[in-house]
Length: 370
Image (cartoon, rainbow, N blue to C red; front, top):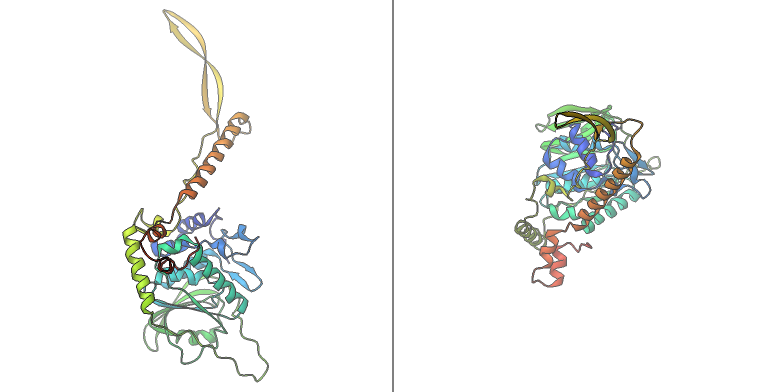
């Protein structure tokens, strides 16, 4: 499922296209999408496809199309401090974006049946925390992933404010997922070829709304021998933050405000790396000589004058103009690369400049490598 928007050259280009097509409609969702490069969740050798509006699958690793994730993020109506459960959490791409919005006082859990995919998701999460400059522009709720069949969750599990299921759900399991919601909570899932938003309005009442026609692979269930009792899935506990964690959160928040991180140039700066200026569109011109006349005294004398004529996609473009344009394009690309290299992590530099023990600096920076 996908292909609703044009392919982008990079992550920001993809987000621009999703915004233009009205799949991304709110600033919070846009910031989360810009902060996490979709290409980072692809295997080496497949990244060229990352910015197309298409689903991608390799073995057990799967990513839905960007337009689907956009609709899901908008339909969840995320707010800071909410609890979130991702059923079929996969690579953790969506859970990580959710974590940027619900913040450090939210709850972010994921259940995935394939152990290798859970390990992949944990590796990608660790890489985001340790190497991405976007991490320092947000207060983050780190996802916790567990291996298991999301249709075998323990009956004494707690309920959540927001739930998403990333695989096709049979109608028979709809109620099972709805009861995992708190009253006032929202469940988004693909059911009967419709991406559906379900809001729990009371103990025994729900409102449903179809969002988008979709085609999802069905949920994979745990294989077991006949007569074997299914293994129950224990969701992670909702743990209280340690005093050490709370101190780090509030110190980082204060330092972020002092450093001005997140307040410059609005959402563009909050969302991640600065955009390289778009290449200006040039008119293709060719020179030609024309005859004109000038008055000298009382005589009219012919004179040759060079003139530029606009020339669009004419097959007879001047070869010299093409060479010059290629050189200018190269200069612009080089300038863009220089601008990217000049960008600094102001927040990180601010912490490193503090008169604190190195061990405390490392803790405040989450032991980041960059």
